[in-house]
Image 1 (cartoon, rainbow, N blue to C red):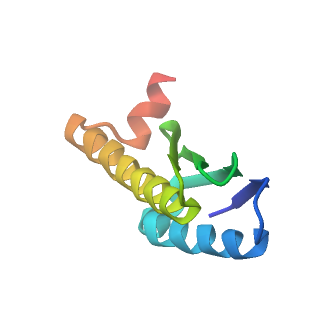
Image 2 (image 1 turned 30 degrees about the vertical axis):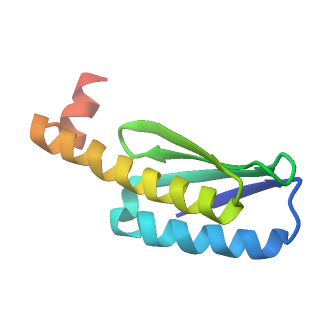
Length: 109
C-alpha cells in the first residue's frame, strides 16, 4: 500500500503522519493487492474544525473517497479510515454478489 499524506496547517506533522499510516493499515491491509495508491489530506481550519480526506484506487473498480470533519483531528482521522475500510468491503461484497470479477471487467472495457 503506497500512502501519500498532505498535511496542511497542522502542528505535529510527524505524529499525525504515523497515526494515519497506522489507522490505514488496520482498515485496508486485509484487502492486499486491491488497494492502489492512497492519498490523504489533513487540514485544520482553526481550533474548532479539522478534516481528513482519504482517496484511494480500488483495483480494478476505480477510485473511492471519503471526507470527515470534527473539532478533534484524531476523531476525524478515525472516522475517515473506518469509512474507507467499510466502503472497500462493501464495494467488494457488491461485486461478488453481482458475479463481477476482474476477468469480466477487463472483457467489458
